[in-house]
Image 1 (cartoon, helix red, strand yellow):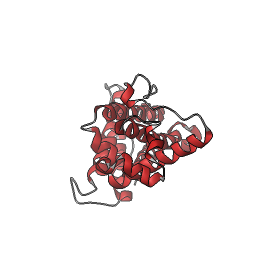
Image 2 (tube, helix red, strand yellow):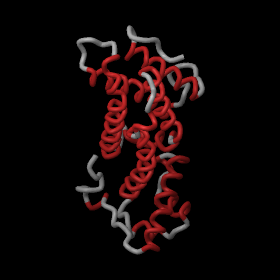
Image 3 (cartoon, one colour):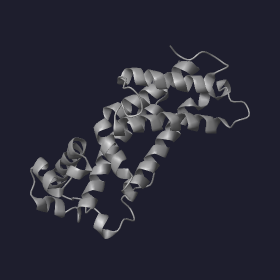
Image 4 (cartoon, helix red, strand yellow):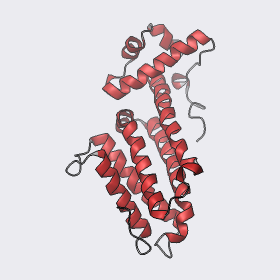
Length: 225
């Protein structure tokens, strides 16, 4: 994904701090903004509230961000950087070495579900606002596609065992990802009881793993237990 901060209009462009003291203050502001989004959502996200949480004067924000929306997008990227760091495990071959097809699918789905669980408070806020915020929607879509690329690349080595003859393997793997990812988005955004009786996170991840293994491997081997 290209740098989302490039090519933005002036009212959304951040002026980065140059001095160490200013950088530390800006980091506190971004951290405070993420916490505020997690606790109060976009509705509670104001420059005054961020300043109070970060214990900085309003000028510390306005020196960097010309508008609330500019600050919000900077905070959004700060929070997403934490989530993107979690995804590095999908590109680490050593973590997945020695797993057979069923175990690999289960581990990949569980890791994706765990990432949603670790960041559910922030993800809930950004998913809900993305429906009415075109820039967050654009960025969220790009980040989701990146995650899909990592997920499908991880499962690519089991392509010969995927039970969909005549169908492009990439399409099958992407469909699996989209199904799991969409289910996790709905769970994070609206809660575990939105579409069915709620189950705990462990049980839900197990169900998603079984469903994915069944979809990909039916006819070749049994799903994980």
